[in-house]
Length: 99
Image 1 (tube, rainbow, N blue to C red):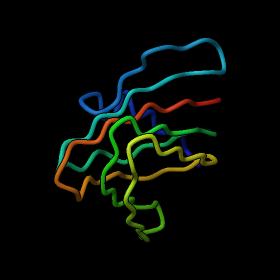
Image 2 (image 1 turned 180 degrees about the vertical axis):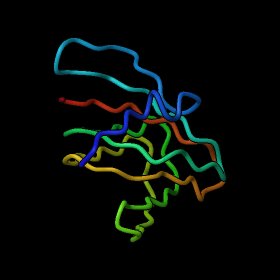
Image 3 (image 1 turned 120 degrees about the horizontal axis):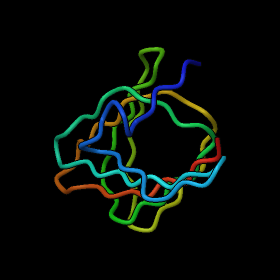
């Protein structure tokens, strides 16, 4: 997997709020109806401060759609994807990455 840094390819949606060697915390904001740019994450845990309905477009062309409640936690291994907010409210997520 070629790593695509979300803070570089989608700076309107992703911002590094803290980084220390192999660890990084990234803030993700996605407005209702918005789709971001394809990007990657290493091992990560996503905390949905403000949840919503998200469609994830995977690198292989498949997609999944799910509703995330406020306070939901999503652990995930390394992956490349595009996020689409298919809900009616903005989504705010804090992502804890381990490089």
